[in-house]
Image (tube, rainbow, N blue to C red):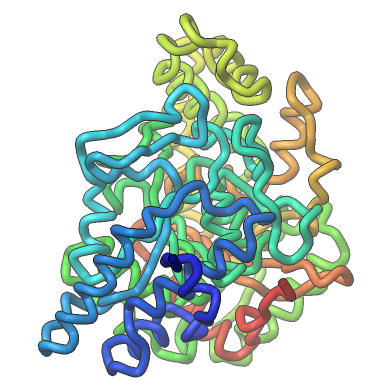
Length: 466
């Protein structure tokens, strides 16, 4: 007897991105059921990427058929009607496992549903399943001691970035057109950058963290990954639930916009390929009508220390009971990072919070009065290979994590929004990404700039050969 997976083998991905797929389903050109079957077949064909933890196939297909019946009756639930999405395995769905990428919570079944998941589903989206993540969202590379490494669709030996590794890989591989991730130090932006997709870290507090695994209350931010800034704009419209239309802000040009390129830190020690791509991106933004200027920024180097002295003790507190009773069930890297966090004393923590407030004020009264946003690379280096970032403890681990996330942790500490999107490729064909950093609650402006850049540069249209 044939089943859903057998039927899926003849399905193909019906549309290139979230907006196009939603339009095709709404117009009856593609059924929700065929879109779900295409996602299943893609996931089954790409198990070596290890992006998908689990799919609830029978329920997902039943939901898809219901969406098709609704469309046939002239009832569309919203702007995501029938679109399959999948999410980092830390967003709750009542009665469904949410494993947090861990052994300890592998059978954890929450009784609440994330309001973000609920909003997506209320707009008609179909939740396909759970995606790979670093254990307890602690890791910037895509390694996981329990689930194995998530692999980059562009090059199986390259890292995906983390901790939203499965979200970046699943979108890049075409399994789904959008996914939720979380970002405490770069965990949306690094997978987006290294997998060649778009990712948005909203302002801290802009989206609810209810129904989501906690790590650091002062820095945790949920947000979307997708193939383009336009797709992100639609997802943000749904996720915010405030009536703000982020798509309406996409103007296609950047006339009147001031974009600053930091004259220090974010341009220091860049790989030559990254520096070259940044120079070209700067020219593209200027051609789109923006005023692109060099700006001085406060010394960013202390920001990574402040970030560590905030998130690490908060995370250690979240895990204190488990560390006391189940320390052996943590992966070595994660356990070591949590134990380091437990050594941060209350005075250092309070001083870091005060330092954060001062840094926010310094940025808002300095460079972000001169310009509307900052343009930086997403990372100092091109995408690392997995065997180069395997440190598990001590100074080597700190150095590795610091190098990968040097340009993202600073923004997380500040709590400001930031958008990542492709701006080039290195000689291996691996993606290089830019980062746009804005003032609090300037997500619409960042998406406008990202969308205009993508339309002109078209790097986001590249697809890995799978």
